[in-house]
Every structure is written in C-alpha cells, then in structure tokens.
Image (cartoon, chains in turn orange, green):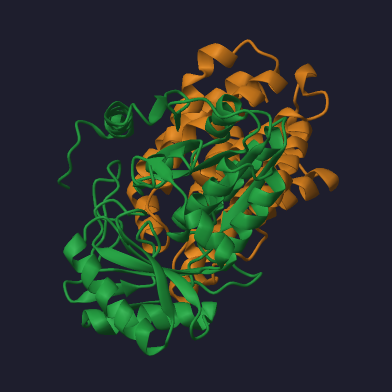
Length: 209
Length: 330
C-alpha cells in the first residue's frame, strides 16, 4: 500500500459514491438527517486534494494529514469516526518502511477497533460498524489462515454486502436513527451503504490490478 | 428551495460575517477555523465556557456569547457538528488558566468531536452534556435523550456562576444540576431545508405534525393529525411532567421556544395555554422566557422547556447578561 495507491482508490471511491449519491441521500432522509452524502463527498474531495501535499511523505505522516483533514473538513460524526480511523492507522508499527497487504490489513483492523470505541457502536446497532467490523474480522482471519489475497478480498466484498443488507431489519440503537425506534426498521443504514461501497471499490480495484 | 443565500458554500461564512459585524460591541468572529469569542478577553481566573454545535439553530450558540454566558461558540456547518480544531482554537483564545467547561448537546457527532477536543487539549477541562429532550427514551441501549432548548438555560445559569468566580468543578456540577432539573419536548408542523441539500429534510402532510421532534427535524415519538393549541400544549407538558415530576407549589421556569418559522404571536398563545394547565396543577411559574432561541432553520414548530428552580438557580437566572440574543440587568 503506497500513498499513490491511497489517492487512486480515493478517486475511484469518489466516482462510485457519485454514481450512488441519490440512493445514499434517500436512505439518510428516511432515517437520518440527510447530510451523510455531503459529508462523505466532502471528505473524499478533501483527501484527493491532499495529493500534492502528501505524495512524498512517509506513510505515517501522510495518514496523519489525511486524518486531520477528514476530522476538520467533514465535521459531524463522519469526521470524528473517519478521523479516528486514519489517525489510528497512522500509528501502525513500522509503516514507513513499506506496507504489504498483511500490514495494510493489520492497521485497518486497528483503525476499525478504534472507530468502534469512539462511536461506542458494535455489530447489530444499524450503523456502518455492521459492515466494517465483519470486514475487518474477515480480513484478519484470512491472513491468519494463510489464504490467497484474492480469495480474502472476494470474501470481504461478500461480507460487506451481507453486513450492509443486515442493517435493513435492525432496530437502530446508535446514531440519529435510534430516535426513530421501530420506524427505522425496513431501511438500510446509509453509513453501512456508503462504507460497503468503499470496501467493494478498494477490494475490486486490487483484484482487477 | 427559497432562501436568502448567494451560494451554499458561502452560506455560513456570510452569515457569520454579518453576525460579527452587527454585534461587534459584544463578539469577535474568527475564521478558518470558525469560532466566536467575546469582544473582550476572559477575565483572569474566570472559567471559560465554550459551547458549539451545527449551525441553523441560531441564536444558539453564537448569540449566547457575551457577559454572563458563553466565552466562545464553535459553529459547525448547518446541522453538522463543529470539529476539534475549532474547539482547540477557541479554547486557546479564551482559557485564562482557570480551565474550560465544554457545554455539549447529546447528539453523537457533537459528543464525539468535543470528546476528541478534550482528549487533545492540554489544560484542565470538563464537559456538561445536556439531554433534556423527554421525547426520546433514555436507556443504555440508545444514544439517549437529545440535548435541546434547555441548553440555553444551562448556558445562562452556569455562565452566571462562572462570571461570579465559580471553579471549574462547581460550574460542571451546576451545569449537570440544571440539565437534570430540565425537561423539553417539541412539535413541528413543517420541515426545514439544509442549504447544501436544497430540499426539505422530511415530508409532512398539511394536516400532520411531528410530535416529539428534534432540533434538526429528526422524528420524535409519532406522526399525528393536527390538533388545537391547547391539546398540543397539554400533551407536551404531560410528557415533560411525567419525566420531571414537578411538585405542587414548586417554582419553575416556563420556556416557550420557537423553532424558527412560528411567529411570536403563536408562541405567546402557547405560553397562555401552558399557563392554564400549570395553574391547574398548582405549579408556580416564577420565571419565563418566550422566543426563538434554539431553532431549526425555517421549521414551523415550538418546544416547551420546564426547569425546576431553587434559590441558587433563581439567583443565577436573574443575574445580568449581555449577549446578542439575551440581555437583561445591564
């Protein structure tokens, strides 16, 4: 995983989110406050705009810059949660000497764990954690079992999609949708949908390279 | 969407610039990161009070910066939490060394961002979390009750204590007490439109109201058919009383808050109807506040807040205050 890799994936994610923007916005208007899509779009744009600043930096510094930019530039819960994700990834051991796929999975999993702490949300609460936690577990398990990287990524895509769909019938107990009680049932969580799209984009991009 | 705006991107900046210019005797607006401070530096040894939240709730919080209330406010984008860099810059500007008290409404974005700021901050700091909205069930399995209009009451009363030499711990304790003594509930007749979104946050029929609405138009307890003002007021007060349990002859503050699109004429009508019901229950209205303080853009609607008052709270409610939105005793 290089900085060039990060920027390119961000550009691909930007296109995918753009293509699904109205669906995500609609999901958020059903059970949230309608600002999720703008937060995500603003965050991705800010990361892409960092290209010139971070392209020659060591990985830890680049990830930290991304974290601070996402934190201050997005606002809301998304900013704090994605800021926490990148800030934790930046603290990964020895990442300035190269990040292979095993290392990338390790720091991503650490990041997801920190996001879980920050948002105090676990699987089953109708949030993006219903996608991120199973994906993180699937990736870690794949490395432990010495599976082929392509196989791991294919599994991760499936796990992400399953997690996203699982939010449909859940009662929200975290985030703004929790105020709706029973009324949130039957709707897919917009954060779960946007993070599933991001996971899918990154995994497919690696698979097709 | 019809709004006074030139572009969604400049909406907040231009509004802040206008606010800063109109009230330059009271506040200073700072940009990138955005925060509002008093026009004069914090008095040596005074605890600094900092609040903040998404924009669109004006005058909360910028209009509550000034003598006797806040030292600084951090406005986020419309309906979006401010970020730690704003809070840290504000704290650096207004901390006189006696510490910083963050006053935070219980919405997950606000809570997480203020928490990160508190973690990154070097000096002593405490936080008061407001959660006065009785519309939402409070339990360990939910995000919990929302912080709404009683935040204004917390900022007024704790602001007075800080002005009169209260320590950081004392200010924190009083803030928690005012929050505990308060209950609020709101109702909305129409939706509101975030400038960047360009369309209403939710759909609501001409004959419908959202009962227990939050301050972003997010749903509350239920969708109801329209009723008379007295019926709506009774239902709001019943929900609050059930939670707050004020006793007969107990003194309370009755705060009728407009959501932005309801005229004062109607807010005073609600006050009258609320007084009818509270009089019947022998609950003594000893202080009143009526107006648009904790708004949701152009939403038509109102909330009622009751705060149980004891001698300490009365004293700090009555003490002088000089902000853009609240001004008495000066």
